[in-house]
Image (cartoon, rainbow, N blue to C red; front, side, top):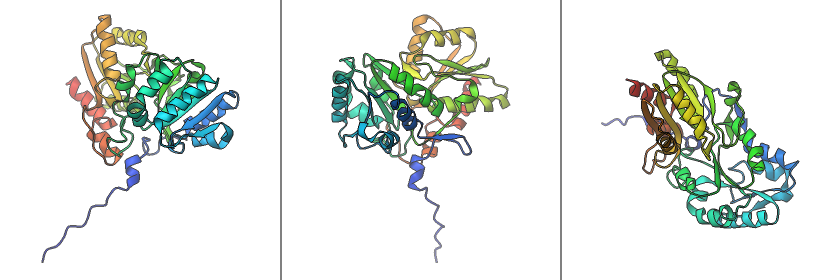
Length: 335
């Protein structure tokens, strides 16, 4: 008589959209929605528009507080971009939300020709950047930065946490022109206030210094590199973290200065994006063009492939962007 092994517990679907916050980490609920709603109290020309995803991009907070200035465009991202362009031409400042994959893959030409080329003041804020969902390639925007970096007159922002988002929203509004922001949604960790940090559009900020490794990072990977830097101390490795929340225009002056300050340390660029076409290649081109050559240069990012579906924590570990993997890879490179 055969005996079947007990079935392993299956991870619930929610694990595929798990929070990026570590257990016990401080979080802020819907920082983007609250920040935009607050800003709209004093800026009457702000309108919110979404492609059937207000609840899933935190724009529903704006919708609740300013229902007469919210527009639901349905599942039609190209229409969303064109309608935003029309609103901007009439003197409004439209904030458009959808998922990053839909803005980058489906609506690129409309954002490019109707908004960026025309120099219109439209803000495009997109959830699920990089590997922040386990729903597979249809929803994983692993190449959005590569797609958008080549678009002229488009500012690109990749915030780290709730603090970054809250501070970025008013500065993005004050900046005249098209902006694409990678959006962290839901319960977003809050870490940068522990580092006396202030967001400045177009500026990179050194959060901590260290003699052995320089992490240059953006987005949620700044959280991971900060965690990794703390853990590396146990191996007597001192790591610096330079946070680059603005991908374009890149703060090349600060990056070059940081690398040149300690030319003997390993430079590791960490990003929640494909290793093709993102922050890593932008930093490499910046350093090569300036003649600033570090003793070692490595990238931590997503591989150039379509990624699996599954539980988000498992995928982060599998594809090398978990804190454990950042620590292990850094130690292996240091030898």
